[in-house]
Image 1 (cartoon, rainbow, N blue to C red):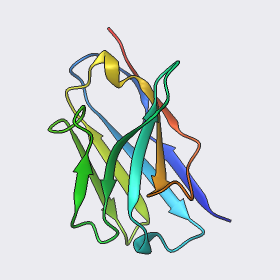
Image 2 (tube, rainbow, N blue to C red):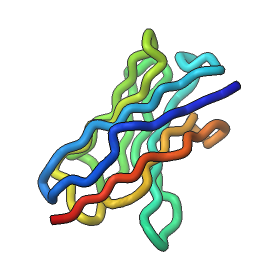
Image 3 (cartoon, helix red, strand yellow):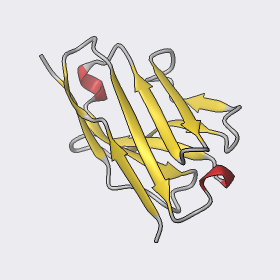
Image 4 (cartoon, rainbow, N blue to C red):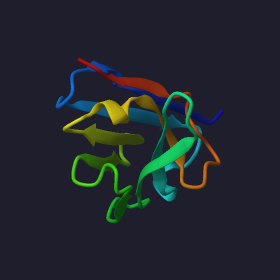
Length: 114
């Protein structure tokens, strides 16, 4: 059974940081490019970042570039998203998924509020 389980979300003040994790199982994680996407209340799903299967290449949405860092540990089948300098517009449910969305987790809520 394919599983992607996100964790690390929560409530943080503007300017704060969070690190999201996504534990993968049931498929060959190291073969897949992986992405983070997010969905804010009342909005559509927004792509945030993608990392190559081997970890060498990354890409970011302009809205998070310079503040977020995507990484992965293929030995641990885990994807990460380090989020710094958070602002209220980053409030959303964050999902990890295989690039293209074949597999997607249930999401973790990130709320940025004072």
